[in-house]
Length: 111
Image 1: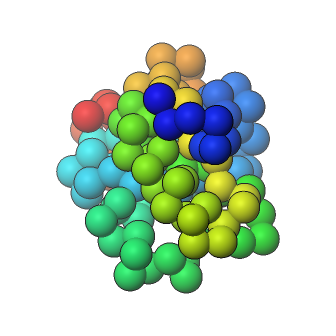
Image 2: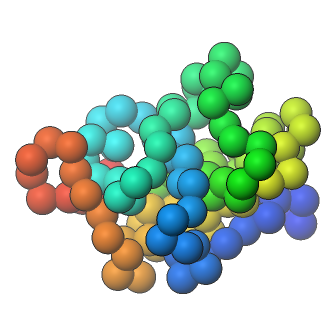
């Protein structure tokens, strides 16, 4: 979908201590996200790029992998070589049995 220039990882390849960058909208984040993930909505990336680490591997995630793939491409075009797209996004993350937590007090779900 994004071509060979966008490196991808599967949920099973993501270490428990990986830097997960969740680029979904606030309501998606609140409903359910990976524990320990960092929230930075896609549209805020250009203004907040300095918050994205350059010295460790960063796994970018959205709902299904589309937006995160665009963010990975954007960051790579701006000098990041340590970013990977989570193949299938939070939908595949949850379906593969990886933990999902919510901020709302309700059961976690992927929107």
